[in-house]
Image 1 (cartoon, one colour):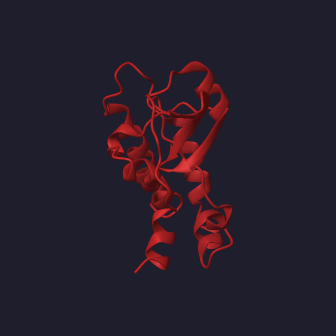
Image 2: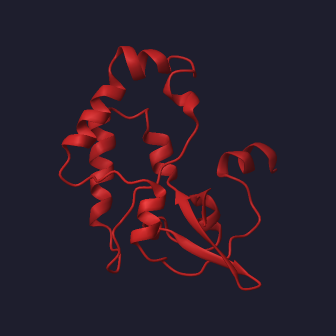
Length: 145
């Protein structure tokens, strides 16, 4: 079992962003749950950076130290960014961002697409983590003094 959580929770628990390229495990009363940290950097790049820049960024993640683990670029976000937010329809569809991004990902010799469950089944946890009670970073900015 696993869930997907904003990387900000992991940073608040003391992890470095460079370490958040795989999943971690939390536990309570001998029950475990695996946690995938969603990359804030990817959330801000997709679909707002030019497609080639976004692909170059994803490819650069391969260079991060993984201690024998296959690195993962973990992305999960609001679908509104892909055509519902103002001006995103023109950028994503009419100006071809989505087509360029998909073609670039498929052409990359370094990027391999995987479902969460497949990555989870093929990789080991990066370790135990206990996340603090917090929200995603934007919510903290909007609600905390």
